[in-house]
Amino acid sequence: MNAMLIPMVLVAIPEPSDKAMSYYYTQNVLWAIGIVWGLFVPALFLFTGWSARIRNVAQRVSSKWAVMLIVYLAIYSAITYAIGLPLAYYGEFVVEHQFGLSNQTLAKWITDAVIGLCVGIVISYVILLGIYRLLKRSPQRWWFYMGLLSIPFVCLLIFVAPIWIDPLFNKFGPMKDRALEARILALADKAGIEGGRVFEVEKSVDTKKVGAYVGGFMDTKRIVLWDTLIRRMDEPEVLFVMGHEMGHYVLGHVWKSIGVICALIMLALYAAHRLSSGMIARYKARFGFDRLDDIASWPLITLVVTVVFLIVAPLFNAYFRYNEHEADRFGLEITRNNDAAAMAFVKLQSDNLGNPRPNHFLHLLRGDHPTLAERIEFSNTYRPWEKGEPLRYQEYFKR
Image 1 (cartoon, one colour):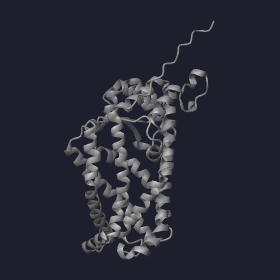
Image 2 (cartoon, rainbow, N blue to C red):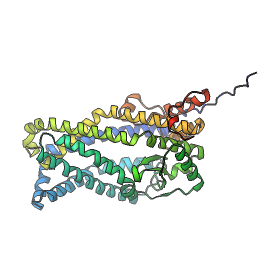
Image 3 (cartoon, one colour):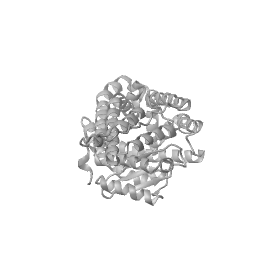
Image 4 (tube, one colour):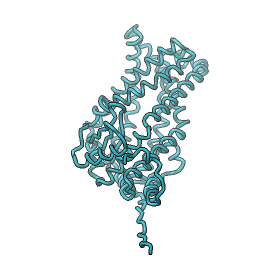
């Protein structure tokens, strides 16, 4: 006689609270305003001739091209930041406090904002050096060479970010719970990850949300847990989250994403190359420059690149949603704890005021993860090991 089958208990997909829905609508409005703002500001610098005036100031400061470039960029970045400051303050500070999601003090927000501005200027300076040197040396192929150079540049950024950039904003250290760390490292060993490190980041000074991510590669590769997540989730849930993040490593999502990002950069720069000559010929009197290799053209390049990124965003997001789904699958296969996985997403929804079923069209445009409803449902139902079916990623697991 067959043993009695015990009915499978599924984790229910919670309905979002009124507060969560209000937060969702607010974020959508801010997202739309951000898009308009991202197009308006560079267009403003172009059509008012501000960019050309800033170039003239930079030329008066120094005749050396490299110095002139940093002066232009510093002034341009400072003005751009000042124009966008009210919107950034409202979206990043006021709204997060309004919905009870932030622990951040105003002083910490200001400090992080200034640090972010300085880091952005340094990175942008390197980018501008490359673009405008290539424009002078190879006016027809600059976009192709810059696209190729973006590969080592993006790799370098990902490599140094965990050790030089991220610690500027938050405190990183080893996990305080050594027993949990040992379980995570054992899971990493099962996943075939050698030399992986687990860090705990003090995000509670900024937010009440929960999160985790993978960062760096090669010698700087690491899995980072927010201290808020450690406090909110129990051990099996944390282990599933770690299994998910390990999936990104094992499945090569970091390297694949670098390739996709660099291909998109090359496409956007090519669009800037193709479209700029016509725009400059038509509006050169208003722009104040007649060549793309003039540094005053930076807002024009920014504008075209932004438009290209917006156009391809649905495809770009679909790619990342697929990666996230497969990382979920990896996490489930390595832990085989469906309840823990589903409950981790339930807590993610609750603590981050998530909407499990966002508007489909908006999700295609801006969603880089599967919906929470999809992730909870998948966590409930994906159980090939119970049916004796092969696992998709069994080959990666140490027995």
